[in-house]
Image (cartoon, rainbow, N blue to C red):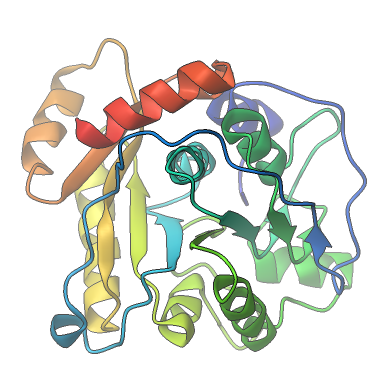
Length: 276
């Protein structure tokens, strides 16, 4: 996720792991799929509005996880969706179109997803070393940016053979992926996929969340819900007030520190979070 220090990224993910070498930007990193665990009661984020209300056909097999900004907990929410889908016995894949800024000793986002969810059908399409937006990170590295049309084709092909494909974006909804200004919102339009918005708990989140939802609406993109990515154990006045003000759109809230849990405990927390 662009723009985070190594300390901020570690706090969001809940731990560190042995570093891995980055795959070439032009070659997707694909890890083998394993059998999902035994099924649990089905828990899904709020369903997207009908396509007739959004202007685009909505894919029920693909959901895009984006955020109101960076550092809001997208990876943890992505892992929660993946673990719940696997627990239902679904064939689930997770895609990270672009990974940026993994420091020595840090876990890439898909490694966090694997550790927390047990899902191993993981696909990273490009990686750039600096903690910047995807476009800026590619430019700084002197590497070609992600081809968004290729990414859409790749993800659509995955969805043809999976029950669910979860796509985690970088940063916020309108972060640039290439010099032409392509965004994860453009990918959602190409795929006809709903977007689950992850947001912060504290001061400023009402405006950031409203702007993100407005950006979805004007593009005719279905909303899959809104999740607070890290709900504090001792919320203050601002957090409690925001919970009331977001009640009409809120799908769930993941507790802070969830990224440090073992897989079984994480699955239980994820189920409770989306029922909250």
